[in-house]
Image 1: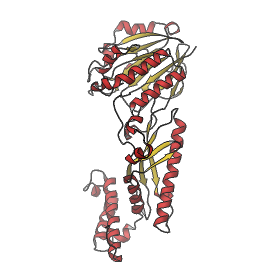
Image 2: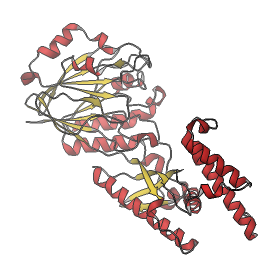
Image 3: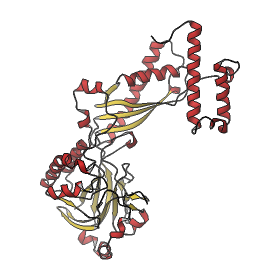
Length: 434
């Protein structure tokens, strides 16, 4: 009978995400977004999924708790989750990471049914008898917050011999569980190398610490031994965009047959591009510009939220979008200003049952400017236009003004647009904003 093992990466109970929905969304829906989008909610979803899927074991790869001071806050949800799973016949094991080197061992001693492996920085091999069959877990826990030595140095020769010699047909596959920085010498995060881990003899290494998953989902061929990061279960900032959630490993015939990523994070961060080239030119008036840009944005959010909803096994509560304006358009400045006003006004939109909002607006767009023509003259516009032509033609010239040439050119174009706007207002007698 196949054994189902749910593999849980960094949880960080006690941490709350940044870039939450705008206050206007909370007022309108009456929802406590910090709680609804927290790692605690991700953990509760994980526990429910484990029970509903009838998994045989749950393995936690460290940094279960955000920091040692959060152990009191984490105790309640962690204890309830472990108790629910143990009552459902699920074995629960884990290792401590650099964030919970003190907290997790203490919590493990207080929570019945939770087994911590490798406490004190020594590898430990657990023989686990699940209701569907046996498996083994080789684990190591952080002995302190910073650990500069390779943890494999604590793997006793007799323990490694057992890993290699015990028949999988009788004892089950060996799953390595470790919180580590691959190739991270000098970082203090238990540095290892993939090539060294591969020689230990485990059937897989499931790693914590890096929040972006690196494993590949799908069936595994005979002899294939997965090694990679599980990623965090919840996304906490825009640097953690894309899918997040635990992994389900199916074990049968003494080896791992399949890996499935069960995406369930309550908050999803995604980039979104608004290409100016896709907008009409010209607009009949300002009202048409606003209507068309807003309709284009809403359509893009509909498509993105639909794709996210289809990918996740548990739909996210919110989708935080980092919107980037790209390309060129004669009304670039007006379009960028409109979008900035939307974001500043707390824009949000419900699509496919998900609250979508723009957590940050990035403007890489530009106006359609005839810089060559503008450069002919002696006024400030012409002077700046000539400077821009020189910068675009000569990287060395650009580096006189900025370490990143692209940023300098964009800033110069933006300033040129503003000068043109000011000149147009002066010629028509229009004043600035009241």
